[in-house]
Amino acid sequence: MSNRAGLNTGAGSDSEVIFVHGWGLGAEVWATTAAQISKKTKTRCLDLPGFGGRKLQQPFTLDHLIVDLEKSTNPGAVWIAWSMGGLLAIALAHKKPGWIKKLLLVSSTPCFIEKNDWPHGLKKSVLDDFSRELDSDYDATIKRFLALQARGSLDSRNTLKKLRKNCLNQSPPDQNALKGGLGILKTADMRSQLLALTIPITMVLGERDSIVDSRIGNVLDECMNNLQLCMIPQAGHAPFLSHPEQFQRTAQDFISN
Image 1 (cartoon, rainbow, N blue to C red):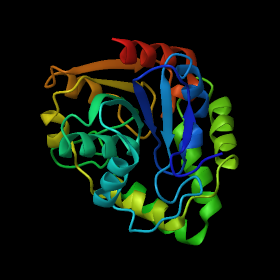
Image 2 (cartoon, rainbow, N blue to C red):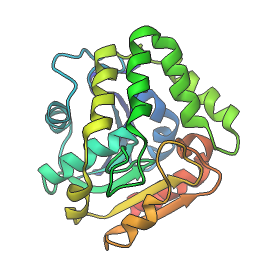
Image 3 (cartoon, helix red, strand yellow):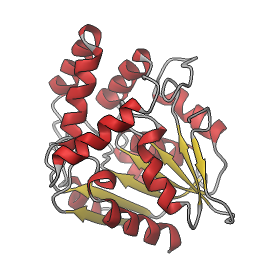
Image 4 (cartoon, rainbow, N blue to C red):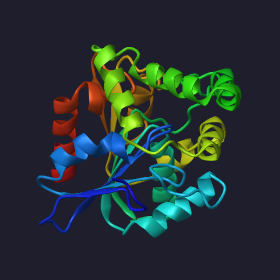
């Protein structure tokens, strides 16, 4: 179902909406959401290298991924980026002004790791544990991460079921891509790049997200005039799966306005 371009749906509009996935899951995770949005707008759900059957031909690093995204897309689209995908979108928007018309960040943060001046991230040891476990037991590591993404949502069992279904519907990710992705999550700090952006940005956060501290929304909202914040109560790390109708309304409003 997925190829180099990912999933392509919709027609009849000159505008385009690009979806970017996060760590561990490919373009398939966006299929249902994109199908709804494609009723009004063309959509493309990208598979990053090493996901959805795409071969990983270069190291899975932030710099290589930005080049890949630039080659895979056209300028002037609206981007919807989830989790780690948000870091990539911020980096591309900063490097290529005008490439991204508007950016919807979903359960994402400019810095995933806790720092002295950034208490809103994960402890580095959490991702270090994932890195070690990935070498010894791939399946268990993916299952644990999916459970972490579903945790906190109102219907976490159903959200986890959807995440597992998406996993089964895609080719297994390249382990080097997974390792590289963890490296990006541990080292990338896009705070200054995000603050420098002038394009319209909406940030959708789950109030009960166990990966991205929902309080970052208020922190960033205080210093960014171009940011709109959407907090979804009783949602975890995948609000587009746990609260699809509310998420789709937010996304459609963002795309249209």
